[in-house]
Amino acid sequence: MLRLVHILKNLRASVTDPDNANVTVFFALIAYAAVWTAYGVITKGPAGFHPDMTEIIAWSRDLDFGYLKHPPFSAWLVRGWFEIVPVANWSYYLLAMLMPAIALWVIWLISADYLPLDKRVAGLAIMTLVPFFSFHALKFNVNTVLMPLWALTTLFFLRSYTTRSPRAAAFAGIFAAAAMLGKYWSVFLLAGLIIAALADRRRSKYFRSAAPWITVMVGAALIAPHVIWLAEHDFSTFKYASAVHEAKSFGATVVAALGYLAGSFGYVALPAIIVFVVARVNVATLREMAWPQDDDRRLVAMAFWAPLLLPAAAALVAGVQITSLWSMSAWTLLPVLLLSPQQVTWRPVDSERVAIFAAVLPIVLLAASPFIAAQNLPKGPPSAAAQAPLLAREVQRLWHQIVPYPLRYIGGDGDIVLPVTAYATDKPRALVPGFIVPPDPATLRQAGMVQICFAGDEACLSRAKAEIDGAPFQTNQTTIVQTPGQPGAEPRRYTVMVVPPRS
Image 1 (cartoon, rainbow, N blue to C red):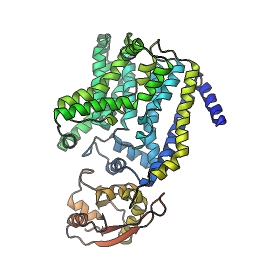
Image 2 (cartoon, rainbow, N blue to C red; image 1 turned 90 degrees about the horizontal axis):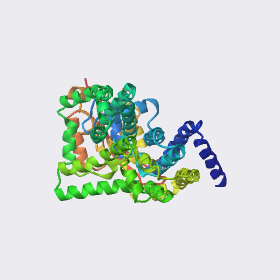
Image 3 (spheres, rainbow, N blue to C red; image 1 turned 135 degrees about the horizontal axis):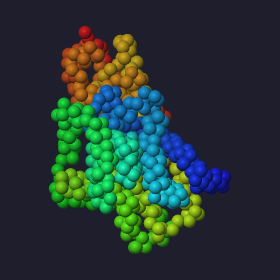
Image 4 (cartoon, helix red, strand yellow; image 1 turned 90 degrees about the vertical axis):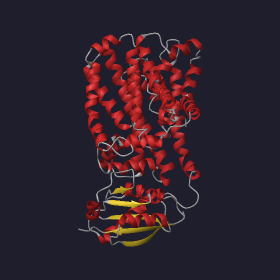
């Protein structure tokens, strides 16, 4: 333990050296992502991928400018990633942890414009204590992918606003479009940055320059193919959002909006408390944190508060419920707000202590991960997600006994189909409503398919036979005895119906 503390002190000395700081932080974030990836593999791997993770793989098998539930960026990213690395626990959790690691790197870059080096180190360290950048990030989905995209959009917006640089403005447009293609929730980021730009006293210089119009044109050009896709598919993603988030009573909406705010600030309570205690913050300093007096820091404050608070106001108007988890991408500027006031005194020893605590915590959790995994083992029969690697192998074996061509489509119970689709090396498509645009009957007839149900699930078997629609098929009863990472788990039986291609 003493050796670890010595290593961390040397790391702190390196990161506070202006000549070495960027390189040191870069490699520290690689280590951070690696440690949390290992934690995810050990604690979450035995249960299989979360449904949010498998459904994105399902979308990614058909590259398009949109999908029935969400815009396409997360699926594009997953498709590109798994073209390089195999589908496995380690690779998917690594991709998930790259999202907060990149966001933390951007936070480090932004803080260089507002904070001295010691405070930059402290700001980065306290952000790693926010659960969004660790535990919650391990579940890769359309929310986690926004973390680096919001951070990059904010970085280049602030730089384009203060410098009117065409290059920064173009990058702001690129990442703003990517954020909207990640999740429509990003409309609150864009609206918030527009409010920040309009509220700033230097707005006339900004809007008279080419910068904002470059941002708009670049962003509009990049998002245009998705808008066309929406029109061609009857705005299906909007219909999905409306169906899922249907209007609630005003009372329920108020409670949800307050819960969103309380929960969001609860997630960042530990970093705030650390700063308040170490810097002995008083009321005057709190006011300066929340609403600074100088123009540059006030622009930062507006760019922080507007995207964070707008969702609560919009929810009240629209009558929909929101959750604090959706604020996970909104904290990029928190270190600047907390640490930039001159009244916040921060000694080098304070940065050292905070950095050591932030570095030791994930290492301790990694050491404890086998015990955490043992406590989290599900009771009763294993899920299909847990058995998916073995089941996918068996399904493909049954298919290739009959058909020499790759398996292209899998239907049946969605809880089985999505994880099996994720692990199958033939990279088939999931015939589950809401995940891909269904193939036309002729394509499906020529490709063939597999239908999978839990053995004895008569409702699923009935739907599967209706999907097969009278085509000849072979029925197999398959028992998966073992569950990766769970020796001795109960076996589960599956019915696998193989429908060969027909001309």
